Figure 1 (cartoon, one colour):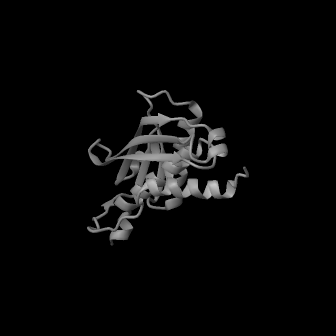
Figure 2: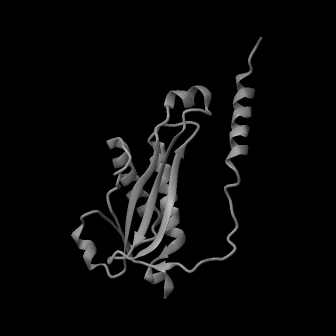
Figure 3: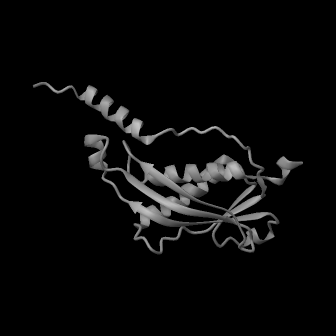
Length: 174
């Protein structure tokens, strides 16, 4: 019996996409964006979950990069940067790992439907005094192709999108 691999891959992808559900949603109530000039990203916390060091570093670095790329804030500060104290409208972002499933890159290469890597973090956007503005669980995943660390990139893009949807600089409000 001859197996058509192209047909099997197309069927696998269409099946996986049918279970993923709709990803686009209409904005019924456009919300007012909160004003902020800068953001300080705290180190990723992984207290309850054992997270490999490369994932923790990759999460942090990808998050910084994506926030800078989205250009929502005038400045993106790293954890411990003392110059952030001078910023009047500073948002502090603290993320904590809630769930982590390290998948298998080999399984994804062979089957394209098994071996997914996923990571979920609770992200809290606060002011300098610790008052919470926004709290959201954000998941990063790599399902089909790519290395396990691509889940950290996916998370960072989604977190930067959440920031862009909810915050704007003071200059945009003038």
